[in-house]
Length: 249
Image 1 (cartoon, one colour):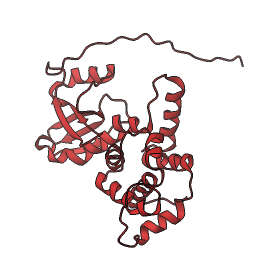
Image 2: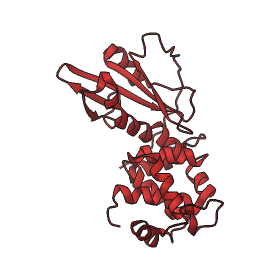
Image 3: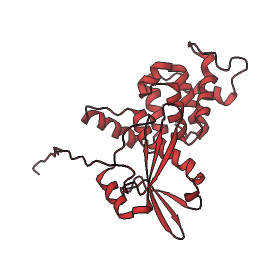
Image 4: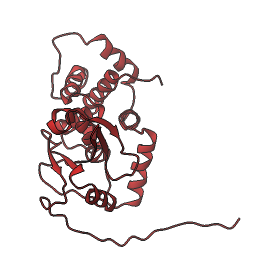
């Protein structure tokens, strides 16, 4: 398959939501269209309203209660995407969207499948994006608006395992920013032992950026030196049984 542009990915998300409607939402773990618009939009680094507009573009072609943009012809670039992909069934289209939206594509899909096999609590595609990529891309789109960060250069460190997701650098040094995402306006967040240790070492140079309320209208809170008492963290210890497999050669 050819490499798709950002606009084509947005159009595909809209086509999926229009064609499969509530069944499509459930398939990916979304509880509402607003939640899907927010998560798709921020994960792709675009506006949630764009995803809604593309869904509305295709609504006149499918049987649902929405009328969509029925008073004008479909835009040609939308029709081109429709002609190429509208024949996909629910499973095929869901897999395609995951491959296009996940940053690590097939690796993220593999990790999703492993988590579902190994855990009784299944993390859906939607939940993985909310707590990860959507929240991270939200931060990327907003950090320059924060006065403290406006002159800093950003580096994505999510795959480095260094205890924070982004390194913000200036001539005076660097900040570490850990990003968390929540579906609700209130709830719990967890720091790993690595994140907690790094936060303790960096002190005022460590920030916790929490994106809240993906289900409706996302907003954020920023915590500098989150271990300084403003947020009361409780230590939780869990016993883990680690399984390994050996063979004789």
